[in-house]
Image (cartoon, rainbow, N blue to C red; front, side, top):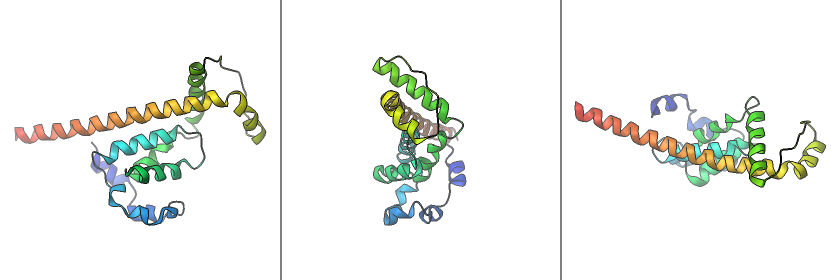
Amino acid sequence: MPKKLLKRIMPKPETLREHKHLRMFGSLLHNPNLWALNRKSAPGAFAVGLFVAWLPLPFQMILAAALAIMFNVNIPVSVALVWVTNPITMPVMFYGAYLLGAKILGHAPQEFAFEASWHWIESSLATIGPAFLLGCLVLGVVFAAVGYLMISNIWKYSIMFKWQKRKQK
């Protein structure tokens, strides 16, 4: 596991504790396990971050931090992973989520044109909303599970590799 690399690029806990949006968590941020990278906190942080990345909500970073605190996993990793959904990837990811949700519900995908208005959002919630939200939820759970298992196995195999290397010496 590239633990040294992650530690080098992660912000310091003091910096994040003083962040204006994270100050609302107060003394909850003083738990040292929220900042540690170990075989339990890293896979959980990946699961939290990837799950929240699929939620079509504003303030994903705050939600990821809250869930990281609740599940006692690494906050910086959880918060960083919500940026999987960014202005470049979001249209493709959310359209795929809509198509999956429509397939699960047995609906034919509807044609629509996105508009950046509150009226469009209100009218779309009734038509494409259920399929879209279901697809986001299913993909969030799937990506969280895959991320958790993948990081957990990478961590396990890197430890096994280090032990084998030590035995050879």
